[in-house]
Image (cartoon, rainbow, N blue to C red; front, top):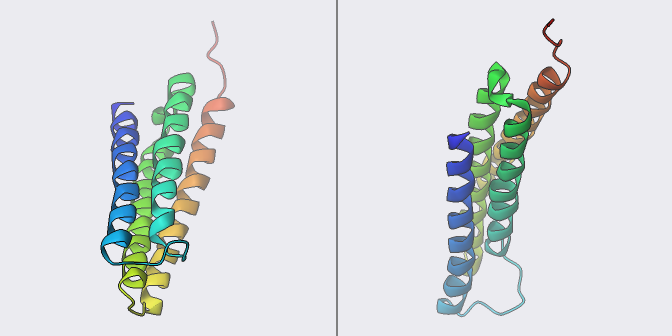
Length: 140
């Protein structure tokens, strides 16, 4: 439970900091206001997928003891790896856009791997949740 709380808190801090980075980096580099860049999406991704989702999972852990399932550990590490990989590629791609440089297909490919990890982690979360929800009740 402490791991979930710490991770959610870390994503909240990094999410807020990424919004500040976006605003200042685009301003310093005279990036036209209103033009699209991946940097503008990092803030929301970190706050929603990191902070909010992990707070919800924390509530599920409190209610159903999800961490008693072996699958939960896999969920936690895959989810965090996927989110870090995805947002890192968004930062890289967005920074290149602001600097007026082209990004390669490699960035999109690595971001795609991050999305695959996130998807696999969500499946593991649901499997762990199902296991805890429908576990046979001990006889009294």
